[in-house]
Length: 205
Ligand SMILES: Cc1cc2nc3c(=O)[nH]c(=O)nc-3n(C[C@H](O)[C@H](O)[C@H](O)COP(=O)(O)O)c2cc1C
Image (cartoon, rainbow, N blue to C red; front, side):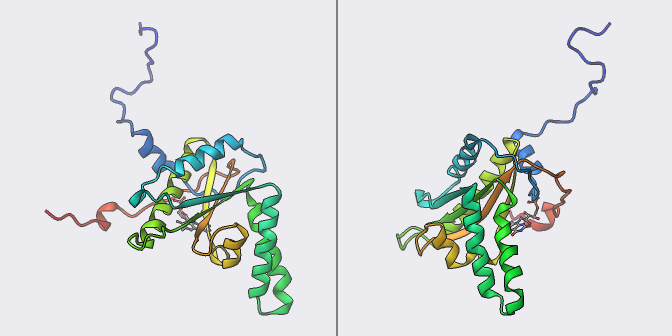
């Protein structure tokens, strides 16, 4: 008779469990399709807070977040549409270019713009500030994964246009790193593979 609490289907030697952080790193996928359901703001706040725990040299905390929800996504889209129409040289295609760009921020209930404000200290290389910002975004993506939300880091040429930076109320020195779209998944996470780390690594001793 099996003892209470013991399952007969338990494998004799279970595979070693991966640490939850490693598990989340492997499981996280960019999810481009989300539902219209709006996650609680407290979840978004946890994602932002995770971003702020990224490493940052000289403790500059260079990341800045602008959370766009509701109508603010339409405003961003309108501005992006104007930028896209302006870039389109063919007058007959301007309207379509504007509509396409304007629809982009409506793809998720939350669009979080992430930028860095590089330190004014000339001894702090800008690349380190940008690197810290990228680390913050990865923390955010992993936090979303841990909270059961779908997220995707998106850029595109418009993200780097000065008009976007201005629209977000950032300084002229700020560098926009992209938008993190967040919502509840409306698709199965795509299969992804990575090159074997051994192909990419040289060990020296
Ligand atoms: C800096 C950066 C910008 C990105 N911009 C876009 C984008 O504009 N559109 C897009 O579809 N994916 C974008 N992605 C997401 C990548 O397409 C995605 O990470 C890649 O396909 C690998 O999939 P995974 O994140 O599920 O592992 C971006 C990723 C990074 C790091």
